[in-house]
Amino acid sequence: MSEKPLEPNGSDKDEDLVDFILNLPLFEFLEREELHEVAARMDFKDLDPGEVLFNEWDKADFVCFVESGELDVTKKTGPHSSDVMATLRRGRSIGEMSIINNFPRSSTVIARSKVRLAVFQRAAFDDILSKKVNLGVNILKGLANLLSINLKKASSRLADNMLPMG
Image (cartoon, rainbow, N blue to C red):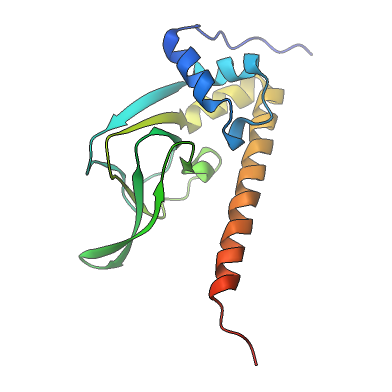
């Protein structure tokens, strides 16, 4: 069964996105032609310092990749307080699980500086998955790999902070 092309539009925006996403772990199993098909369904979003990308408990339906600038990932510690849990820079992603599930956001993300993000919506992923199954499966492989890497890092940090038993 042959799959119909997704009609990338070949714009400069798409070429800029392809050049950026080429080395992102989520897309590491894709060929350049497939990256064009993904880029055709992505957009850039710019944030000013202090601007909120999303709040903890918001509906999650997109993943973002930091193209430039810095984002602070914060978690509420009280009714009127929060702590910065991480600062994300170029090449880092936020919200990877949102392209496959409907869970709410687990943190608030705020621009620390002027930020440019590449945004991939769940609807765009669903479109790819329904029209280009092999491409969708390769994105899922990249997602599984990325989540595995993140889990390994989290486990290592947890082990480093555990008290010795005994």
